[in-house]
Each structure stands twice: as C-alpha cells, then as structure tokens.
Amino acid sequence: MQVKKVLNNNVLIATHPEYGEVILTGKGIGFAKKAGENITVDRAEKFFVLKSEDEQNQYKQLLDYIDETFIGLMNECMEMVEARFQVKLNEHIHVGLTDHLYFAVKRIQQGLDIKNPFLKETELAYPREYAAAMEIVEWLKVKLDLAIPEGEIGFITLHIHSALTNRDLSEINRHTQLINDMVTVIEDSLRIKIDRTDINYLRLVRHFHASIERVQTDQFRPDQQEILAKVLREEYPVCYNLAWKLIKIMQQKLQKSVPDAEAVYLTLHLQRLSKQ
Image (tube, rainbow, N blue to C red; front, top):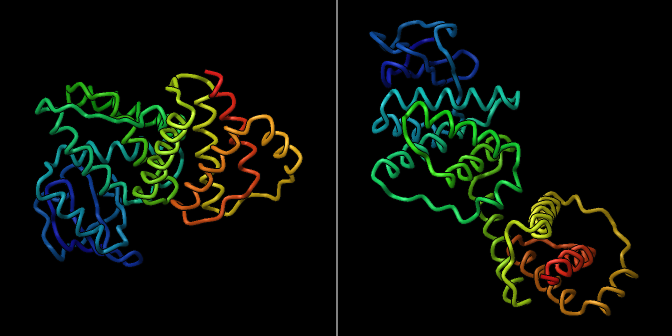
C-alpha cells in the first residue's frame, strides 16, 4: 500500500490495490510517514474501508477534534465487539459510535446528566448487544476513570445492533419510538400505569419488536385465527378494539400492511396487562 495522508501519529489513509482508499490505525503508525511512501498491512493494528465518501469525510472530521488516545480506545472497543460476536462489524460504527461516545464523555465530565427513557425496552429487544455494551461501559470506566451513567449502555447497544445488522441507526430509533408511543396509547386507553418490570410488559415489548421485524421483512406466514379472533372479540372487546388501534398505528408508521392475525396476539397480551 501507499501512504496517501497522515491524519495523526496513530491513524493514516493509504491506497490499497484492491480496496482503494483505506484507513490504517496503530500505535505510532503515522509517525514520520510521508505521502507516497510504501507501507505494509502488518504495520497496522487494524485497517478498515469506509466505502461511503460521506463516511470517509465524517471520520476525517472526527480526527480534527478528537484526540488520538480516544481514537485508540474506540478501535479497541470495536475489536472487543468483533471478538465477542465473531463477525466483521459494518464500518459505519467507527464514525457513529466514536462521535457519540466522545460527546457523551464530554457531557459527563461537565456534570450533565444523560437520560435514556428506553433503557429497559432496549435491553429486552437486543439482549446480546446490551451485554456487549455493558462490557464496554465497564471497560471505559476503568480506562477513563469516569463514572458512566447506566443510560449510556442503551445508546451503545443501538450502535452495536446497527453495525451487526447493517440497519440504519435512525430506523432502529424510529422503531423504539413507535413501541414507546404504542405503550402510551395502551396506558391511556386502559387507564393503567404499566409496571415496566412486569413479566407481561416484557413479553409485550418483545412481541412488538418481533412483529415490527416481521412486517419490515415481509416474513409473516398465513395464520388461520378467525375462530379465536371471534371469541376474543366477544370476550374482550376493549382489548380487541385497542389491538386494532395499535395495528393501524403500526401500519401508518411503517407504511406496510400488518396481518389481521396480529390482532389475536395483541389482544392476548393486552388482556394480561389489563388485569393490573
């Protein structure tokens, strides 16, 4: 490879014969290097390809205000996650998570509180990613000698899930917000305050996430639930009608059709919750 540009002592851009422009990271890899010099891949602790020109530019901009030590910590974080899941992460995490954590740390150092209203829902939806995020937070606490709020685990979880599934972070956030909106509708309609630790609430949230995933990927199977639907409609009319209200909200937000059978499953979940 040929050095194209040295970004700092530990990061440089090189031209790879197969991948084109790549980013190399490693302690001292950029020290005294000049554009045009040859460099072998074994000199790098890590190298990655940001195929999107926008992401390349965003990463370069990060290096203008984030110090080299923090960049090094972030690269170690990515390696921890990849080792844990035995996969290659989508490389947009280098931009997204580095940017997010840098400013999160700055806010914490300034004494600003970090709120995460969807922490429990995030843990329920993505338990493997949540466990990895907890490991990262504990590791950063030691490395930075900093008390990191629990809410930050949820935000890191979403970045990890985004990188593992190649899904846009904004889409994941929209789905989380949709579930939160539907829970609010349930509380208002049934005139209850749902206990977020109740097993029936945990089941409902898991069901919502699975249902949204099936709708998005068109993986619903034909399901003959007409008889059960008729029974539920007669036995639990309030919950059955509320189930259809939630289905219409999902269809509007996701801009996709939701199968009628979903009313059956939601009615059962809602009936259990309504017993509170």
